[in-house]
Amino acid sequence: MRYDMHTHSKYSPDSMLEPRAIVKRGRKRGLAGVAVTDHNTIKGGLEAKRYETEDFKVIVGSEIMTDRGEIIGLFLNEEVEPKELEVVTEEIREQGGIVVVPHPFDRIRPGLQPSDEDAKFFDCIEGFNSRCLFQSYNKRAVEFASRHKLPVTAGSDAHFGWEIGNAFIRANADTRSEEELRRDILKNNGIEYEGRLSNPLNQCLSKVLKIWRRVC
Image 1 (cartoon, helix red, strand yellow):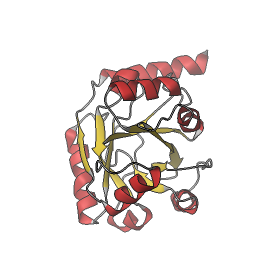
Image 2 (spheres, rainbow, N blue to C red):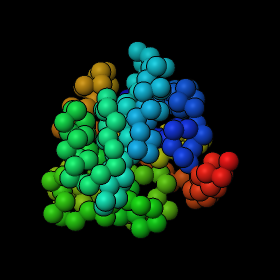
Image 3 (tube, one colour):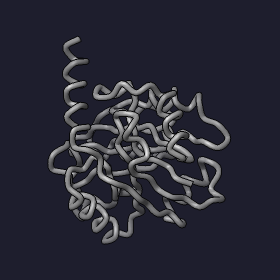
Image 4 (cartoon, rainbow, N blue to C red):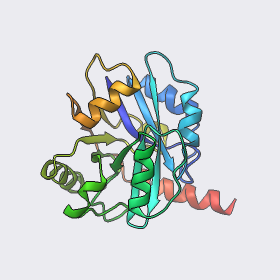
């Protein structure tokens, strides 16, 4: 049961993926589900959820900017606005969501650079992000998670269809419901992860797309 826990749709300024296309591509890649985590909105996840099936789950999420960098909220049902880190994490948890640090220690993107004192704010660490240019960033993330006994997630950070499934968590075969998946992630119950780094050109394409959408 493989789940790509970090993807973006057209509701992010640097992607044009239709939510329906994310589901279609995820199924084609043999995934059991995806988390749609658009920048500062859950619109993409809510729309993708309409195409969820019995054997393919959609997790509604958002990659939210804070004063310290980006934080992902998973299993959301309401928007969380960009604010201070402490406020964002509290609002995610208030609606039963999971707080994940995406691509920590990535010094090229606006990722949060967590200190040991910050660990109390997090539920999980993204231990593999396919868009990291250097595997050393992912390695440091896993080391941080291990040091603080935090569960690890993984995601492609896909902005284009061909990236979906480049990284994923592997859950127990009997994990069927969204609540069971949420529980297993938080308890690190049989969760494993795999991934491969994406072509760095994908990030360049995203930057070009973001500029194009801004001027057009």
